[in-house]
Image 1 (cartoon, one colour):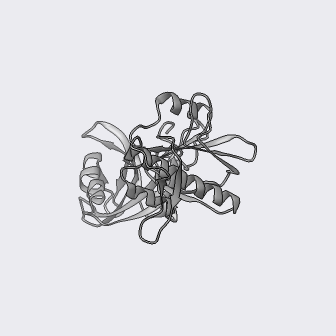
Image 2 (cartoon, one colour):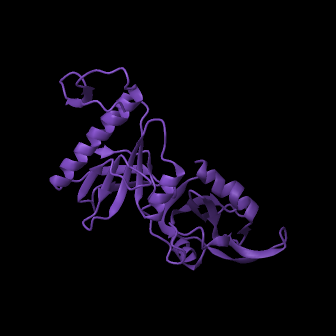
Image 3 (cartoon, one colour):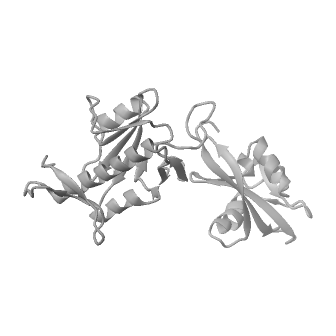
Length: 275
């Protein structure tokens, strides 16, 4: 920044912004964009904390791919601007009632935080929130009812009780198909998440019980094609079983591409590291 004084402007024609008190040729549009967004967001957070109001935000999680929603200042009682922590100086810092640094907000126009800064946040369990700005139109989102940060390094899904990693959301697909042998109706079960899909041969006990409540019939069978024994879907009428190859190509994949009818149910969370 050029370090010259600026004043807020809020007119009827132009969006709210900051302008130099004394114009200078040394201040770039990039710096002005960064400064303007930071000042407006800082003022908004300051006023919201003072008035005990919520500042809601929503982001697409990079861990689970779900869209999360949260009150940004739920645990915050103090906000500081460009406060130095030695190794880093966040654009905006939020502190809890015990004075602990809990959230770092970085406004990114051209340069994202360096690795040493990100490592500092992780080590000290500080949530990093980034707003990537591409044009002056992005300043308008400060006035949105819901902030839309580009990056938030927190997943709100439950943590695995075994390894402590974030779990992923699972959905149970009950696919409506026909038996390959007698053409009677048959129901196929598949668990689907952002990391892929799997069927009854990989279901745990709870998932098998859940599928059974929706009318899915399974049993352990021996496949001559693969010379192996595994759990498969069976036809209630003729006892024919659906082999692994046809299970995915003719039922699951077709459902995922909307070529077969299916019902979708919330199946809770699962840790991909432990299970």
